[in-house]
Image (cartoon, rainbow, N blue to C red; front, side, top):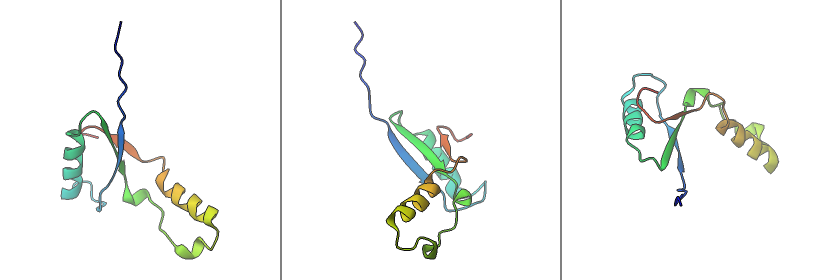
Length: 86
């Protein structure tokens, strides 16, 4: 009989505040992601892929505000990284 225990995986969003491919901050973030335990998945969100935010476009409609926020987080170019080579 196998004792299969499922462990929760923590999804961690990583935002690097630089667009440079070789930035020091990006190197540190990738090194930390590579050393994260198996229970942590680091998802890099590229700030260059995020749309610019303009509160004037949201208006007073809470559904529209939520849709705009969701759009920011669902970019198809976001990547999940487990190693610095990613």
